[in-house]
Length: 51
Image (cartoon, rainbow, N blue to C red; front, side, top):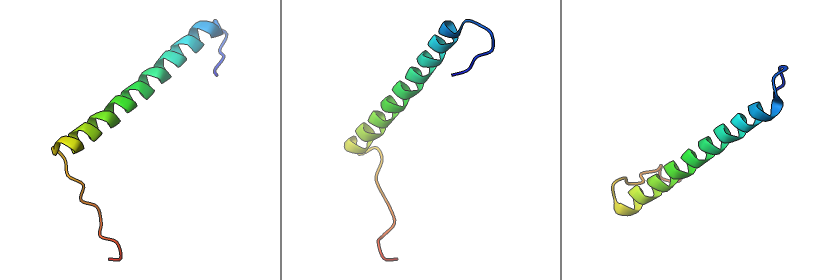
């Protein structure tokens, strides 16, 4: 995605690894929130409709 005269393959490889890490951490965090909700550690409150 970015070129600055360096070898694009190594820079691209780092970018792909960084993106994969961010996506993986986001998925893990989402699963942790779902598990915590299922076990009752967190409760959904929300806003009542029509108010």
